[in-house]
Amino acid sequence: MKGMCELCERDDVVLTAHHLTPKEYGGTETAKLCLPCHKQIHALYTNEELANRLYTIERLQHDERIASFIRWIRKQPADRLPKIKKAKRQKR
Figure 1 (cartoon, rainbow, N blue to C red):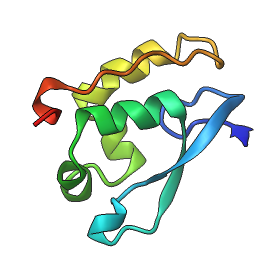
Figure 2 (tube, rainbow, N blue to C red):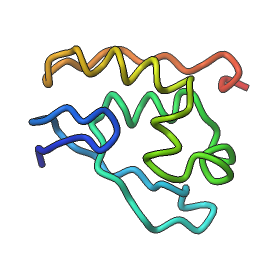
Figure 3 (cartoon, rainbow, N blue to C red):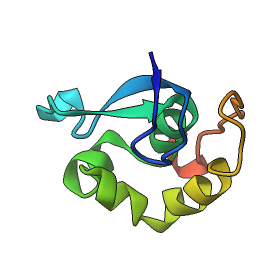
Figure 4 (cartoon, one colour):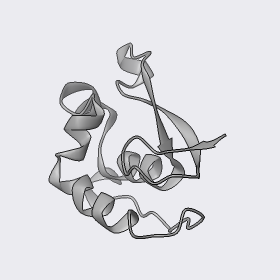
């Protein structure tokens, strides 16, 4: 399914469902995100961080660690799928 990513707001991108609160923490509400945004979120944050403080699109957009990625990805073509590397602190 193609449409607009709720996080970076690029249009005509393939969308995935992101649980705003991870399922393991009882989350059911989802947001429609492009694959690069979805992968970047999970590369930067633990599920615990997502559940405790980053459980809305607005909170994600205002977090500096993802905000710089959003600024960059907005300038990329809709079909661009950049390689996403897991943050060193996430590799534990």
